[in-house]
Amino acid sequence: MSEFRVYTCYVGPEKRRALHILPKIPIIGAQAKGIFIPENEAWIYSEEHNPNFERDMFNATMRVCMAFNYEANTRRMADLATQIQGRIEDLQRMKPYIADRGAAAVAEGRLEDRQTGESIPFEVTEDGRIRSD
Image (cartoon, rainbow, N blue to C red; front, side, top):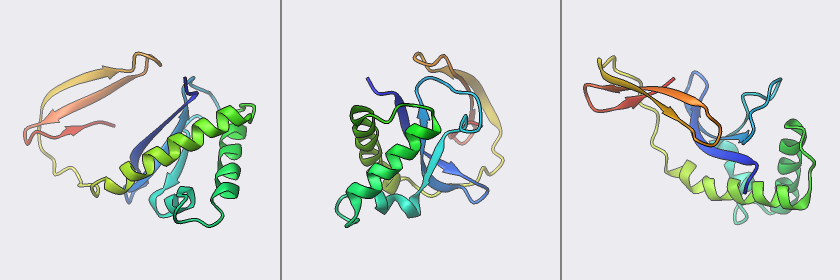
């Protein structure tokens, strides 16, 4: 079972597409918000686009392990590298961010992550979109 969560998201005021890496077990401190890989840097983690792929992926996974105070062992780093590579295509397929047009919320709720216990609020707007903070 992986010790990391890697998923796609929008970051910054410009709402740029990125990969977001978090440890499965929540942490407190400087890296509590996780690590982001912006879309324009995703080529670094692609074996077919980066001639220095092995070196760069090794360095990246090492930095992530160090940031989350994990021992950087081969299994952990290989698992993280596999997750990052598996999400690059999802990142490329993401649609550009569409700013909320102020549609009124017609329903609201909370999603709960069963593994972490994290509760995520959301709203459904009158135009059928789901928005979350």
